[in-house]
Image (cartoon, rainbow, N blue to C red):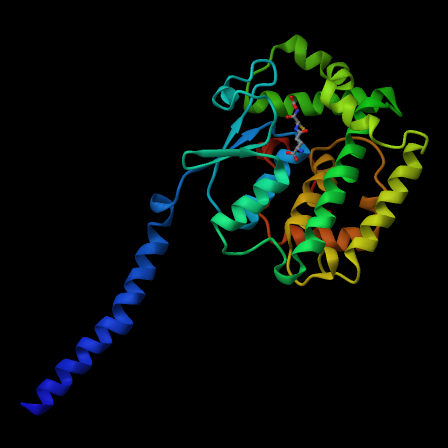
Length: 285
Ligand SMILES: N[C@@H](CCC(=O)N[C@@H](CS)C(=O)NCC(=O)O)C(=O)O
């Protein structure tokens, strides 16, 4: 009788403290996607700011839908009553501004944090450098053509990628390199740069600054894990290469940057961009 009672108590204890919590975790894991608020990323697949957010989501292994916004008639953004992308929607709430979206995402889904723990301020400072220097420098190449052939060819690569997500008229696709050159937000962004510095000097300076931010690695800021800063910089540095775009890149020839890019890529899906696989024309570095 006593043995049966002890056995019964042990069995109850075991079920309550061990089996039930394990079953709870298993069902949470299996039904994670059904219980999770739906995540939708709105934007142009070719926008470096949109790609940043795509990488945050992919690094954190969060399932999301990418909605390609039509640049000619952005009906997909109508619910926001504004035109800037990226826009991220989680459940019923939407917000904009890529870095803020990374912070929001990390608060909402703290697993696999990208905020660098105690190095948060350093991570934010490097991410700021990416948004204010590295990305605008990419846009400068679309405005100040070093080679007309390369600029037009790259513009067509980009318009093909946009068209793959949302159809744009053929004439717009054809004239894309010229439209981009005159787009208000791009012209304004480029005006913030020191245009007295030559393009090759700017590329070299940015490469040196990047390597300084990398410190001794393995990730930016010398951190052991990738953060918002790495995931912001990565698509801007590799997208043109992967999509077969033309032109020089001091970074893609620098060993420390190549090694870093391999470490970041190892934490992301094989196609880390928001364009379909068939538009990737080159292998990873
Ligand atoms: N600070 C913003 C910049 C975003 C941005 O410049 N987005 C561009 C596309 S690359 C855009 O939506 N431009 C259209 C507009 O502003 O009307 C961010 O980090 O998200």
